Length: 294
Image (cartoon, rainbow, N blue to C red; front, side, top):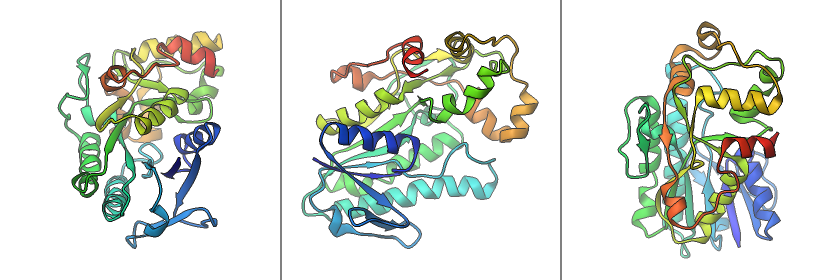
């Protein structure tokens, strides 16, 4: 099986390539610069992609997009976050729609689509929330329309917090936990929907291999509150987590709007589609995931 990947240099992209090759399939990178002989080149700004190289590909996993939490949210940065997802997805969807042999499309999205919902249990049937991140996710998914209308089987992976020691929310915070200065955000009652990097990759491959389309929550079956998450990581590292993280420090580092959306929003998403289609999680509980990853 040949599987093309956009966003192949990111945390999930690199792990996905390893997972694809480990099971004996061929991973093909879709890149913007310095393409190798086996890579597919594309330029979102110019609206170009090497469509001929996508003929014969069995699946495309679309992960590309400007990092949500990499920089403070200025109006320009928010436009970049939106455009990088919508324009890139539109280009890819239109290209796949025109192929003679249409591959499966696994297109990125996020549980951020549900917004701040307290302790409400959210499945793929739940309505989108309000705010910038839900608006981005809705537009991101809608940008696949040319592919969907052309008969391309398309799944939207609504990904939660991906846990990996190599980056992301867990990897970037490890030093603070090890120093004993990590703590909950606010009162810690907000739900964090997480998934281990192992299950993230296995779930994507599950979607490629099975006849599944539409939105799919890529989250573990047991989301936790931020307070419980903080305590669990502290226990795994045998470090204290008694004091809350000062909100002023977070706001200075990330900006108030990003911090609120990224750290203080409560999203309790459940993986109904994965569970209903027979997917078996490697890490069902946060404690199991941390014991393995750390």
